[in-house]
Image (cartoon, rainbow, N blue to C red; front, side, top):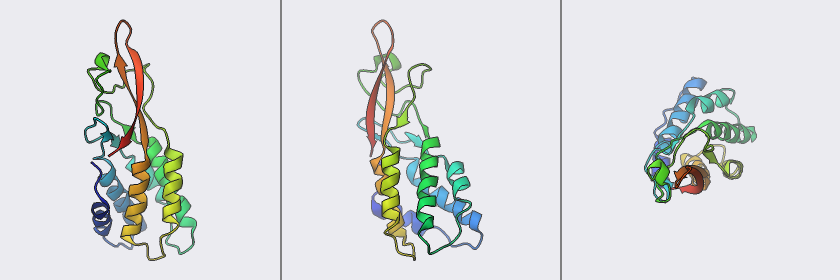
Amino acid sequence: MILDLSGWTKRFNQLDPTLIPIEGVTNFAQAVADLTNPLQANPGGVPGILTFAQPVFVANLSSLAPTLAASWVAILANAWNLAMAASIITPGTVTNAVWLGSGGVDSSTAGTGTAVIQNLAAATAQLSTELATITPDVSAQGMALAFRDATLMLQLQVIGLAPPLALTPIPIVVGIE
């Protein structure tokens, strides 16, 4: 289950200030990963559907310099978008009774299709919009709200296999809970 806003805010508040930019970026990326990796899909999911691509997030934030200009919003939202696009959607974390050919869970069997985040662009736009409302003091609650709302928007298409003769891929779309 996704933590409530106070849980996200608490995790962001736990970030220690640092004068070393890459350390701050790495710590922030770890916080986002800590909040994202335990997610589960609804309905019928178990925790761990998504493994956040933390190295991609860090790499794309490494050029972010402290600034009061609004340019940080686009850089941060783009880094999250690229990291989410590179994140791994873990097979076997969503159940569906129709998927008898794959044991009732989603599958990563070659040829069945690829699990994807269907609305990543919309979730990134939402993140960008919410980040733009944060004041220069960059409150932890504002950051938490922006990232949590964008994460809750995600819709993942996962695929399982259904019999009878040939194992037919049957995709479904699941949200995050």
